Image 1 (cartoon, rainbow, N blue to C red):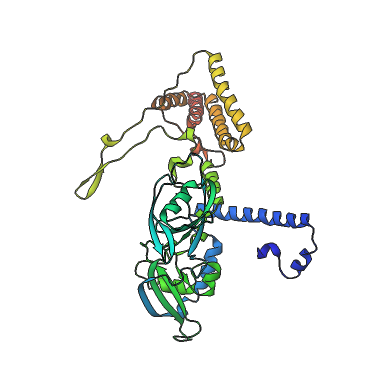
Image 2: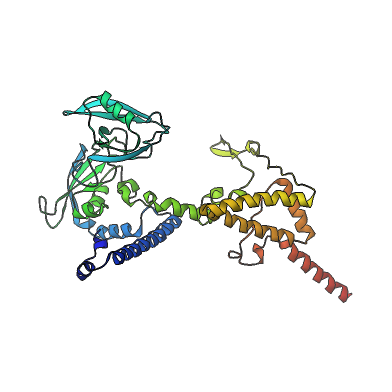
Amino acid sequence: MAILKGGGTLKAEMRHWTLPELQHRHRNMYDNYIEDASTEIRTAIKEKRTFSHYVLDLEKEETKHVHNLTVSNVTPSVPNPFHGKLQSSKKTVAIRIRRPSNAISFGLSLTPKVVGNVCTLEVAAIHPGSVFEGSKLQVGMLIHTVSGQTFNNSEEGIDLLKSAEGAFNILADTLPSMGTVYTIHRKNVGKGGKMERQVFIPDRNNNGHTLHCQSNHHIHTAFWIRCCYIQRALMEHPTRSKGDETTMHSRWHLSNSPLYPIILNDLVSLMEVEGLGNASLPAFLTTAISTSKSSAATSGEAEVSAKNYETEQPIKVKIPSNANSRYNSFITKCTTIAGMAKKDPEVYRMVMPQIETMYTNCLLMQNCKSSKAKAAQKTVGKAGEKVPIVPDALRKDHSDEVNLANYASKKKKKTKGKSNTNK
C-alpha cells in the first residue's frame, strides 16, 4: 500500500491527480509487478530454487552478523512464546469456504471441547475430498465462530455448519507449537543488554500451527525472514538447520504464489523444464511403452531381469484404403478442434504447438526419398515407437539430423562415380 500511495513530494502531487491518472499509475505498477514476478518465478523453476533472489539477498545480508552473536540460554520442549503475538503466528485464523450445492457433508471429524468459557469444536480429522481440504483449516484447530455466530454447545455448532450454504467464513483458534527457545545476544553488548533477542525453533513433528522459525528481532517481524538471530540458533539446533526450507515462513515459498502453477504449466508445455521425463512432452509424443523394473538383491547388488519388464501394446489405427475416406475422417477431427480453439484461448495455447510439430513431422515424412529411411520408418511403425524430431533451433551439426540416410546415399553415389572414371 505504501508503494501505491507514493512518498515524499510524489505523495503531495498525487493528491491533485484525477481518478483516471491514479488508475493508470496503479495499472502500470500491477503490470510491472506481474512481469517481474513471472520472470523471477520462471528463472527459479529452471534453477530449482524455492525462494526468490529478493529473500535470498536479505538473508545474505543477515548472515554477515551471525559471527557477532552468542547463545546465552537454551530452553527445550516449551510452547511458542510468540503465538498470538506476532503476525507470522496468529492465534485466530479466518477461513473462507465455499460449499457446493450438492455437498452432503463437510468431510470433518469434530470433537466438542470447552476452552475457558467458550464452547468450541476441535478438528479431529479432515477426510479426503472434504471442502476444507487444501484450506487453512488444520487438524487440532478449534472452531468457535461460523458465519459470525457463536454457539453454546456442540449441537448448535454442528447445526450452524450444516445450514451454511455457498460462501461463508469460520473463525478457528490455532494451537501453539512446541519447540526450543534460544536467548541470544551480541558479544560486545553482553548478557541482558538491549540487543538480546529470543528465537523459537519449533519441532518438526508437532500438532502446532507454526512450523517456521520466529524471533522478536525487527528484521524478522518486518520481513518474516530468517534473521541473523534465527540463523545463529539454527546452528545450535540438533535436528533443524538453514538447509531445511520449512524453517522459512510459507509466504516466501514461490510454489505458493498464484502465478506459480500458470508459469510451470507454460514451461512444461514448451518442454523447458528438465527432469520431468514424459510429463514435459505433449500427449501425442509420449512413448507407448512403459516399463516396470523389479530388482532382486544378490550378493548385495540389485539385478534387473528382462522378464520383469511389462510392455503395453501400441494403439492400432485402422487406415482407410480410400483417399477420400482418409481426408473426410481427418478433416472432421480438425474442424472440431478448430471450433474448440476458437472459443477457448487456453485450448488454442495447448493445441497450436502440437499442430506445428505434427506439420513438421509430416513434411519430413513426405520429403523422405531414401530406401534406408523408408525401411527405418516401417520398422518404427511396426514397433509402435515415436521418433522425436530435433528442432531447428537446437540442431548444431549434421549428426543431429534424424534423416541421415539421405546424406549417406548421396555420398555413396558420388564415390561410385569417381571410382568408375578412374577405371
